[in-house]
Length: 178
Image 1: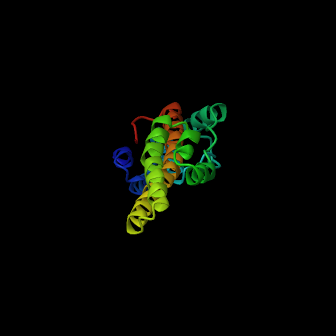
Image 2: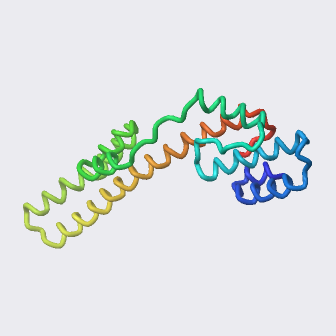
Image 3: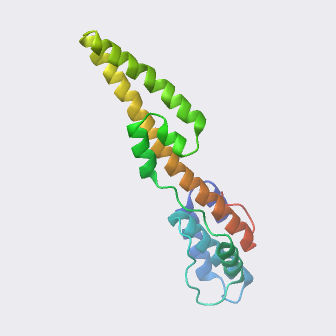
């Protein structure tokens, strides 16, 4: 039941449920070890940790997961600042830095024509039209900056979750809490 709670996204309730079961389960039981390992791994996922907590007694499930994690380190996190700075300086450059070429092209095709249109209207002295084009350009440009930052952060989370799923599977615990 706790694994199903975690699969539905309610990790805190799953941890609480497993904690209550661990307290009433005899320590010599195989189920005690399983529930403790499941609780620790779900807590790791909630906190996005990569280090395993110290163990009071050897737990074969946590040992398997720790062995997998030590031989399969998590990829480096993508820093969001370069994507933000590049997207601010040049529309589409932040997406290109992330390797998202389709998104880079889309961002550039949204902002560059309006930027040129704004400059054209400014050169002709079109007053309110220039202001309108400038505001729309700034709105779209800020959207592309936000998009580049969000994609970098989402990529970090997705990379962690895939790594964590493999750690869970390597532990030998039943179920899929994702």
